[in-house]
Picture 1 (cartoon, rainbow, N blue to C red):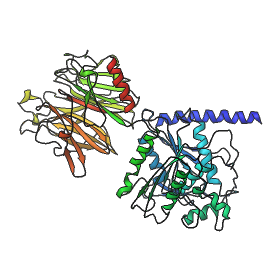
Picture 2: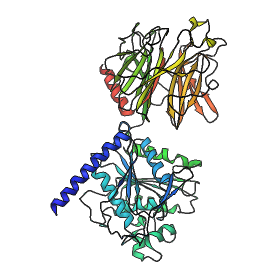
Picture 3: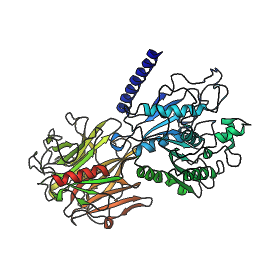
Picture 4: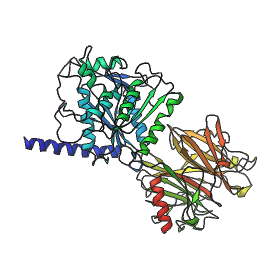
Length: 606
């Protein structure tokens, strides 16, 4: 018997290790069976799982679950402090709203650096289980134990594992929060099933007649349950001092699950001096998921702040700006900001990296991104007249690799320049696209001007996975005018190119936008200008508080400007921002506050 148990444990370790490797390699969701042997199972050929698909072929709901699973969504390790949440979708214990209240919630948690696991739990049925009232709790306990059991392999902090539930899933989450020690099955080891916290969204809490959700109660307990069973599954009556802290969300006008469910649970937690936070919205009804309209749309942001305050996420974002001064002779400069509006120099505005490669050994237009490998990758303009660009990488923005010369336009003998290179990481293909502006004499004569030395740029690109081997250089964007300073970011399902219309006659010198479904194009026709009646160049963008901000160099005015995307269009916020004097054509990157503190400390030492 002992040998068999050890063999099972070894098998579990090997499986979990291989699963971890496949998760980190693919970055995609992976569904894992919850049990080797489902406890108290009754076999039934007539009872089969059914999936409800929407018109786009996406699984919206699941019924008649026979084989419970966990679907893992791992957050970017760079953004995570090891917290994890198991998600229990709602559906009145009769179905699971697996997409809206499962997968979408997991994606949101990933976006704030939390690992997520969507629990497809068994729905109470006398046809496939000996005791239908405990089957969901069995699954929830084992899910918590499974995540905690594999904490090391999955890079999870075993003391930062929470449970989240919507509607009836909220009942299951609150049941686990109070019945984590109940002996509802024989676990394979002594791993605790206690959540460290709970997130309860319009939850069914009570089985009491006056406020319960009758459908959930009937499905779980039957039509005429005994009084003791009703009280046992009324979780507001089960709270004690050991119940995990909770975050609750409910709409006052919820006609399906009365708001008193959350209120009574909150009061019970308060009575036992358990930390709790509750947000009640004026309207929203039931089943609003991550928020539909009105004030309930803000609950995820409020929850994010609660998670941050309780140290379940990394500290709030900070920002670093990479720029050059003068002609770029002294190299890379860095500034930081905690809000994206006020910027301060690092290292007393002295250089972090002196340029060493290229004809003129300059470091103009430094573009830095954080790549899929966690490293910072930088490219820059090395000369006014060279046919290549500079490249270096760093782990911390302070210590840089050997500088390299990348000969991106050496194959074109008539190339006059390679200016303002940028990098964008392609998460889908796991490679990098480097792109820049070049004038090649004899090309695009229809837009050549005799002014400004006859420069007539187009955007070119190459791709690489390792910055050692590069694809053949190709034309990326020809908008029908002299174009320079392209900067590309992914926004939702499309790529946005911010670009400078370099046309001198009639004068443009402004920033425009183009769109594409693919990083390498084709890109749409350029938009109308998004900047005002001043000359702008060097756009770089970042999302702050759900709004995109584009910074740019007002180079004739010798200062920086910015525009913010709003529902009504682009708003000029140049008067709201401040940059160090002399800042020129840079790029912005988002980092954590913890990383910024390290950067500040190291900058003061060096």
